[in-house]
Image (cartoon, rainbow, N blue to C red; front, side, top):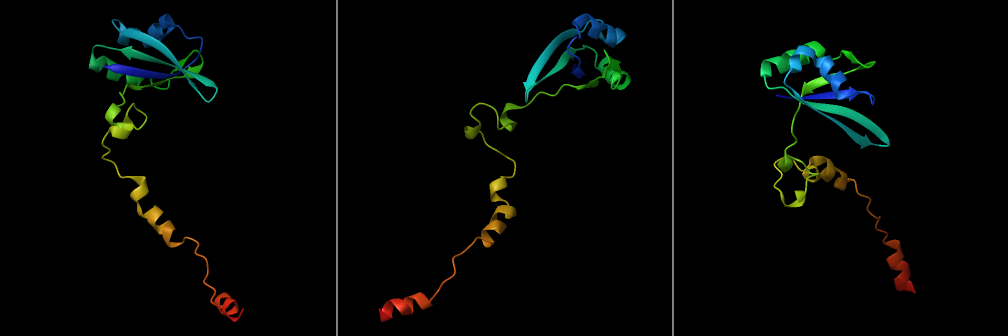
Length: 130
């Protein structure tokens, strides 16, 4: 089972992460990663633990514990499905089984309140008198 470990401080190394997981990750594979988001850098890790029971125990015992002064988020890693993500390549060609936001009542309701120009018949009479 793959685990996601988030909210890691920037100075954390692989051996510190392995010591933090302790007996839960004796044969685990680690990969530390970083992502940039709005001029901030976030660090996280993927840990592949072969035994699902050990991985679930690690989630229960270590979620919220401190690693290098920061509380760590541990959960099961979820892969993002390419056919369910509008940010994937060629998303315009993929079928979308969700409700389209453009077809909801909210947009149709706003059309009822569109601003319409008032009709003045007095101008027509002035134009005819010349």
